[in-house]
Length: 84
Image (cartoon, rainbow, N blue to C red; front, side):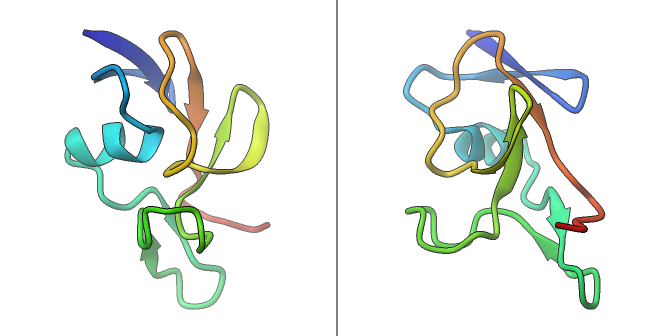
């Protein structure tokens, strides 16, 4: 099984999974919060229409985790305190 690095920790994924699918498969259903009310957000629509699942991938922010295919060695950073 391949691994991505999420917030400094290795996370296994299956080939063909998106970053969001790998996070959910590992039991992580929320990885950022809203600006107002600090409500948890993760994957919502799963098809790239909303922006609930935003992460930073290899230094590029604002990536929708449900659209980004997981790739071995990829570095993903989540934001628990979304200020963007």
